[in-house]
Length: 195
Image 1: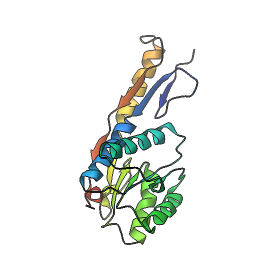
Image 2 (image 1 turned 180 degrees about the vertical axis):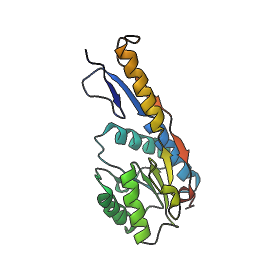
Image 3 (image 1 turned 45 degrees about the vertical axis):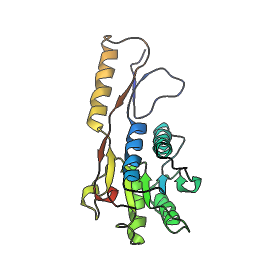
Image 4 (image 1 turned 60 degrees about the vertical axis):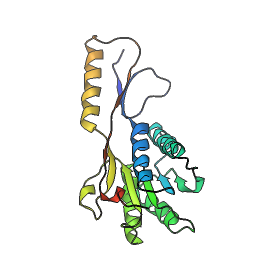
């Protein structure tokens, strides 16, 4: 009988209200943006792929490449990066490979921070495009400023609170509802770098 609303990820084996971002759509839009700049070797770096948000973002990446007729290179898909140092090491390995990516799509802000460090350490930050999912503090102040898919965290919070209060006061009953909040592309300079 306790009212619950899950934010960002749906529960497993439980019918409840959920509010999340349009992860698949946001990822698809970011990768399309990179494809539009001529990139075909776009790497995908993510946190734990067992997390539903990461899985949706990977699907958006795959769908955008498929739409463009680009075959996904499994060597360019790296998941289970749990922090910025792990992401930095993974990005570095990819960038130093024999056939490196010309663009990186990073599916979480800590992963993006690690990728930024790798790009700067290798002096590739003006030659390899970067598009991240989730904005982060000072992303717009870096050189180049980091392009991101921005989640509307205020809309996520407002929607979750409204749904919870509706459950508490009984104005909403029945099965759980899943609400998706649109994301927004913030195409800063790192995402404008051409192949």
